[in-house]
Length: 197
Ligand SMILES: C[S@@+](CC[C@H](N)C(=O)[O-])C[C@H]1O[C@@H](n2cnc3c(N)ncnc32)[C@H](O)[C@@H]1O
Image (tube, rainbow, N blue to C red; front, side, top):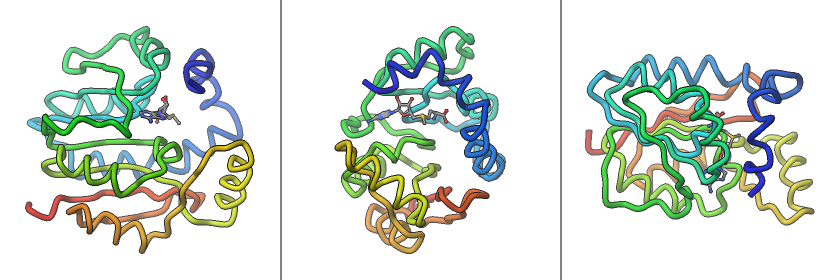
């Protein structure tokens, strides 16, 4: 598991160039969406929470968060920071999301680089999400195409969607999406609302 190996240095790496610029380019818009939709009575499922970078903010604004990740080591680093009282953590693969429990909000940042079958994952998320699905995904830009091609040589399949394609895909899974770009234009920042609201 790649992130098990990265866990020890992940927080440090995200604070130094060039990675800090990626974080800075998406952070303001993500927090803006938090301020817009998160409410004190919301229950939240976070997928790929990692070391909890966004979880602390989400937890302050909501009733409870189930923060999950495929990497136990990333969650262990999160634990070292002190888990807030209204947060529970658990190991979970976004591709194998169980659909037996519902949450008001599903949040997922920096994880869709590792998802190949967006329609199937979106359908599952739609089953567990009552109100909002907030997430980031790689945009279909030239730098991201190069990135995807390079990782493709090593067997990783990174799937890229345009803003329009992403809207259509989400529509099929029951969401109406408001999509913006991160400052660097290489990441889609998506606030998707369930149709039945
Ligand atoms: C770039 S990090 C983002 C972590 C955190 N959301 C943040 O913004 O700092 C990607 C995270 O996705 C997790 N991840 C990768 N594949 C996953 C999967 N299939 N299911 C759940 N989490 C996954 C990794 O373990 C890692 O913690």
